[in-house]
Length: 234
Image (cartoon, rainbow, N blue to C red; front, side):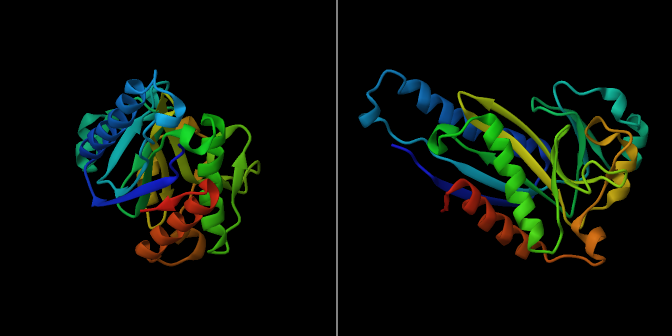
């Protein structure tokens, strides 16, 4: 039985490591369930749950498992001066920044519930963000050479508005996306975002010229996520 219900968890502002451990707990719950049912007839399987976490993190830089530490342009003392932390993670992608005013979404989904693979999953996350931005009159798209959501992709003015980095095990996902809403973009000057030294970063606030209603933004992302994945928020 396929389960397209997604339990929504809004953690507000939460430390990166606390949230990472929460993700791991939920992912393990789903993976253990699937392992325990590996020899059970399909008609008798209990559906695996799905989760979607929304959170804002205090200032933190995170590096993907294949990333290059040299893309962090600060040393330990400078990090402390910026009131920021640094963690190596087990997600894909290179380095990125998380901080206040940025919506971070962690979908912990059993992709078998949705009949999709990892490539389509990432495409769906990008599509969710692209459709959300259209509600603000912002036209965004994909870059064939870089994961995430971009404005003016492929042009010299290309700037990233949403980073994506994921991990999967037995078709269960964790980590996710980071959409710049009212983000302090100065923090991106201390890294080569996602490993790129020649591309800019932007936010909804910067594109439109004024601060955005963060709660309304969350509602829109939830709505578009449900549209794209054919899911039901619970």
